[in-house]
Image (cartoon, rainbow, N blue to C red; front, side, top):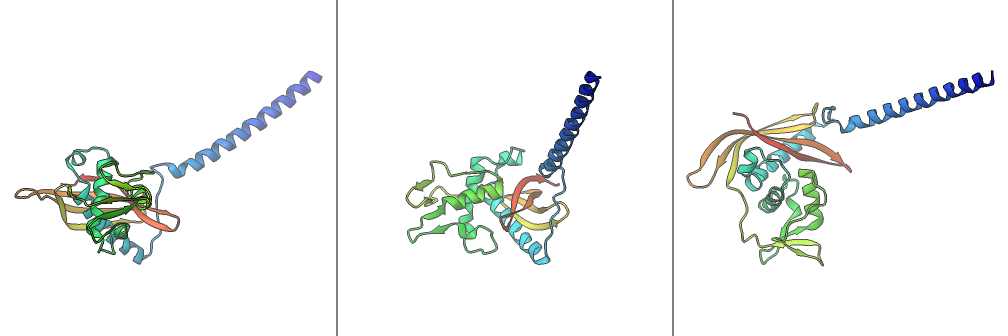
Length: 221
C-alpha cells in the first residue's frame, strides 16, 4: 500500500509538471507570434499621418533610386550592403532643403563645402531605413573623433545614374506597408527607359517615432 501511495504521488506530480510545461510552451509560442513574418502588421493612422507617410515615401524612393540603386540590386542582390547604405546616406545631402524628407536635417554643410554627417544620425538612418544596427561609414569618409561626426567634400560624386518619375504611392494600414510604383530611367549617356518598378517599405513605430523601412524593389512590367 505504501508503494501505491508513492506511485500515486509521483503520477500526480508528473501530471502537474507536464501541465506547467504545456502552459509555458503556449506562452512562448504566443510571444513568438509578434516576430512571425506572416503575422498581421496592421497599424492605425490618421489621415494626416497617412499623407505624411506618402510624402516621406516619395522622398525616400527618389533618394534610394538616385543614391543606392545599382545593377546588382536590380538583378536581385540582397539589401543592406555597405555600398547601398553609403550611397543612400550621402545622397541625403541633396535633400537638405526639403523638409518633407525625414532625414533632411541629419546632414549639414560648412562654408568650405564640407558635408557633415553626425555619427549618431548615421546610425539612426542605417537602422531605421535598412534595419542595420550600429552602422558607420568606411575609411573613405573621414571621421572626426572629437566631434563624433563624419566629414566629406563629396569630391567623388554621388548617385548611381538612375532616376524615377511618375510616382504612385499606396498606403496599406492592414499590412503596415507603403508601396511606391514608378517609372525607372537610366540617366547616363542618352538615357534609357527601364519600365515600371515598385519599392516597398514597412511602417515602424518606436519611441513615439514613426518611420519607413526599406524592404525591397521589383519590376512590375
